[in-house]
Amino acid sequence: MKNTRLIKFVTMLGLGVSLLGIGSVTANASSKPYYGSFSSRKITYHIDSTSKHWNDNWQGAIDSWNSLHVVKLRSIKKASKADIRLTTKKSIKGGLTISSVLSGPQGIGGIFSSKIALNRQSLAEFDEAGKEQIALQGVGVAIGLKFSNDKTSALLYGTKPSAQDKVNLKRAYKGIK
Image (cartoon, rainbow, N blue to C red; front, top):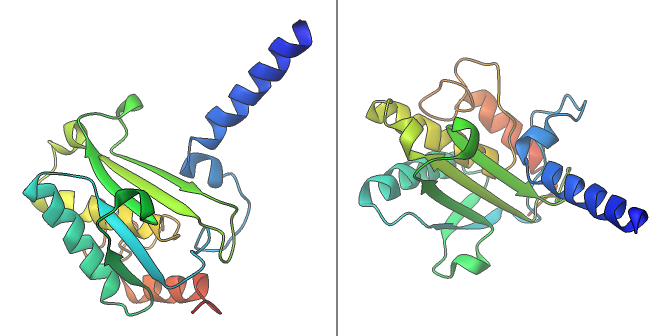
């Protein structure tokens, strides 16, 4: 009986840690500027948000990453078939501004799906440019890039993907068609 409870506890603990998404991935000592990549450069996405305002923010972020011509993000109508799901939530536990979950093993071809959610309650304090920048970060993480210390990077403060973001994305998708 005690062993069954212990196994359940360890299983639930493992599940909880895996659901932390990026938090659990950042524990990796890798110095690579990316978590991994999808198995194709053609990546489908679905925006679950129903508001025109948030759809526009997500679409602007998608367009910015597509402008690099490294990956091709394309919309898909059926959400369950999308590689990436983008949405907003009224609030996110812990007050996080952005929540992200990448599933699959790390490395080349190692992302099976991504889910990114923006916290509308937290973002209420941001101006429109700030909201757009957070959506840009979210899409960058969804396609496999790590947060950056480079002030020009879209994964930190940049308003568009930087030249270094493009280099990092090329590294992540090297050898993938």
